[in-house]
Length: 379
Ligand code: ADP
Ligand code: MG
Image 1 (tube, rainbow, N blue to C red):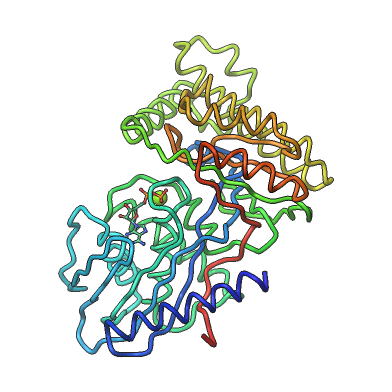
Image 2 (image 1 turned 120 degrees about the vertical axis):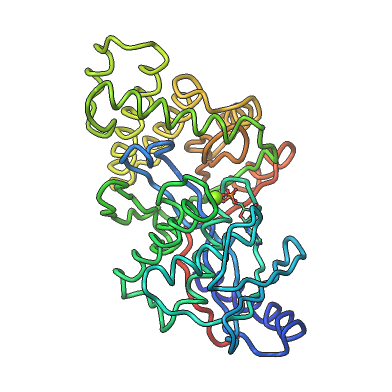
């Protein structure tokens, strides 16, 4: 934790320098984390359970106020700048929509924001399923929000998360659930967050010391990803309509006995068994049983591959590889699928070995569960 904050301050100093060179002023700097989902995949839009953790990769937004009602924005990742009129913002179909969308939704929620110069610098790989989008939204929202958005004000953080989700749903036009924005706003270092996507009730579950989150990025994202995601949502809606209730409330015995097309049955079975696996994983973690937790991860992967059909050869190969490594408790694809990343839970004493093996075929990031979005002070 201390180490992470130290690294953040170091990066913040650099970014402040870049900001001053570009805008000629000293900025305030905000940081929001990316995230990885340990278990509970494709359950969020079915009012189910998820269990993500924030990671040590995140997005920095440096900001200074302007006297007009414009946002002058520069992204280091795209090496592009843009100007947004807060009162006339329309979607353009590019990265600037994430920034404009947050500004628009803040205003719509009744927060009066002012113009700002913004510099965006991120360590999260874009489009890899580690939620660079929510990290960007939340860091921008904190930078633009009037007044302090501080850790103890949980109600404010929940509002912030919802508002950022709305920006992505309604302005960017991506039908994401609430998980990514919620974890960016509520994460606690050293903990996974168990979230009920229906009630937004949540609980922290401590990850025992001596284990690391090891993320392996396939570096592929198959073209199918977006269209298949929409298809799965539609299939789940059809299955729910068949049962006359949310898949969250469907029992496995209902699924097995249902006279419905096999494809819909398998989709429903994934959601129903995945929710059960999240509860099981939580209980396992609470009694310190990493083996049982890891086992639930492996079964989650199999279900995503066989019943939900959102895995791909690259993801399957990485999970199979992790499974054969020493010190790996569990491994699975994480995120929407068809590329992106796997997440493995690895004993620290076998970390180098595991990392070296996975690095031969993937880009690897190692993290402990990180903390929530913050303003970085004293840089
Ligand atoms: P993920 O959230 O898994 O990384 P998404 O497709 O949801 O993938 O979001 C990625 C998009 O978010 C990028 O294509 C870009 O439009 C926007 N984005 C994220 N980070 C940045 C950044 N640092 N600068 C500009 N745009 C960004
Ligand atoms: Mg995203």
